[in-house]
Image (cartoon, rainbow, N blue to C red; front, side, top):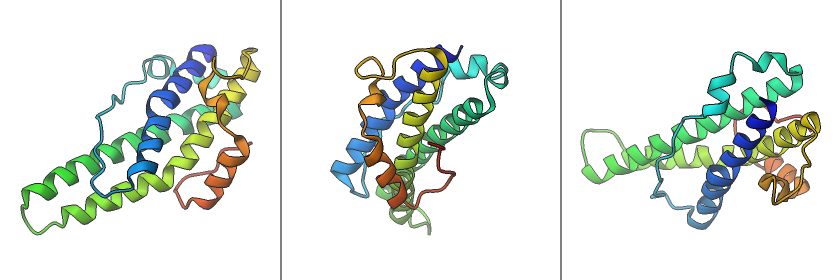
Length: 163
């Protein structure tokens, strides 16, 4: 189970977190075009009842990671809805401002999610005996010092993952 969760976290990192983070760095525009991503985490959802069997620190990291990624995806979906509504000019709601706030929240939260992916994958590798090295584990290619710096500069919500 731990190995499967490790690879699902790494897949989430490479196919969602890194991709969205890079696009946000390029655009920084209030009209960010989001590709809808699935909220389905098959391995996590299928094993949620067994995660408590892992050491407490690992279980905590896993739950925090999946919660943070779910918040990112949900916020990006809300941003896309608000941006779409801004073009339809309906009611008294300032949809453009709402879209900008959702995007700002995502930008601020992204460093913590990236750091969480790195630290959780590294801890799972140590626990399972899988070598924490790119390209096998894509998040291992990240520079930990840079992630820590970005995370300390961000004002995003949530706890800072333990190193």
